Amino acid sequence: MDPEMDFGALMGAFDAILLGRKTYEATKQYGGSGMPGMEALVFSRTLRQEDCQGVMVSSNPSETVARLRESPGKDIWLFGGGELFGSMLEQGLVDSVEIAMIPVLLGSGIALRPHPAKQSKLRLTKHRIYSKTGTVSLEYVPT
Image 1: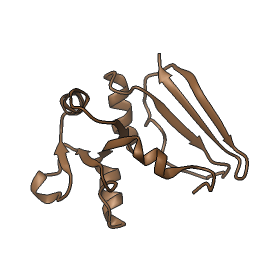
Image 2 (image 1 turned 60 degrees about the vertical axis):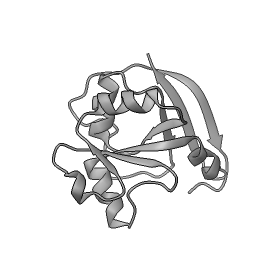
Image 3 (image 1 turned 90 degrees about the vertical axis):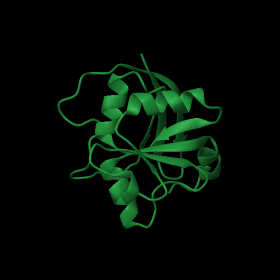
Image 4 (image 1 turned 90 degrees about the horizontal axis):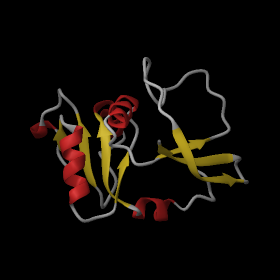
């Protein structure tokens, strides 16, 4: 958690959060399934709605995102889920990509997009450097 980041303002920009199955199952281990005040939607071909209290389960991202976009409200946050992100990017369902580079070297981790992935070009629209921690926030739009 970067002390300079205004997480309240960040969270206030969204009223829906999208999770892939793996991310959803990981958040359940920590007692959560979304963010307070946000509609939580989980994309899975294997989970059943009756087993997932407090979230909506969908197997069709394009239909679900279309419904969300047609409804009045704030932005939609795709939280985690490299496989979900990749498929939604390829379907043209991603409006922007925000990446935070945190100055910690890892020996392994989860890829932004699992291999194999098509190349996706991005255009930088905003950046910010958090001087206290050295974190760099980058915002892009797919081109």
